[in-house]
Amino acid sequence: MPKPKETRIGELPPQYIFVLNPYPHERFSRCPNCRQPTRLRKLPLFIHVDPMQPIVLNKTCRYCPACDLLIAHRDEVEKILSRMFGEEVGDPGREFLVLGTVERRAWREGVKRPIDLSDMLEHMRDFREVRAVHVEPGGWRPMAPPNTTEERRQQ
Image 1 (cartoon, rainbow, N blue to C red):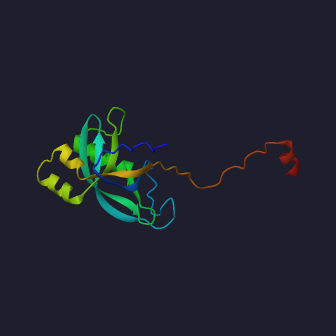
Image 2 (tube, helix red, strand yellow):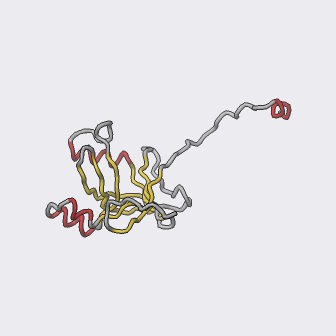
Image 3 (cartoon, helix red, strand yellow):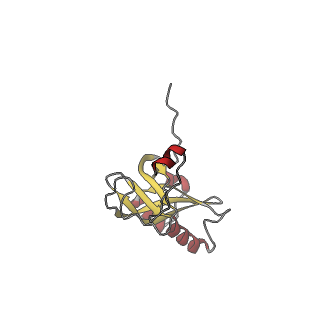
């Protein structure tokens, strides 16, 4: 059976596995996959802000070269977008979605003069994969009660 064709927005080949970190106190100085130290990489991110406002934001993200994993922090992106739009971004009705990255050359050109959306999409890369991250806080936890009578007898 043929593999279904991927829907892509950008015209360049996909790059990076992307995570939008929702935890403001977790900064991921180590990669959640391989535990190697992450590096900083500044990239122009293509962001869609509801309702229908595309924007390219040059943002410093965490990057793991071994896993090709790019991590952006949601609270930082929300703060920048809120300052730009003069209202809270991230609340219901004013959501945003990071769709991919844009070539640096095209981003610089867009800073100098406005570029049409279709021209910007010619220089955009979608993410290869988008993942979610879940953090479990460390610390002591109570031991789970035994479930069966056999487990109770062993204690």
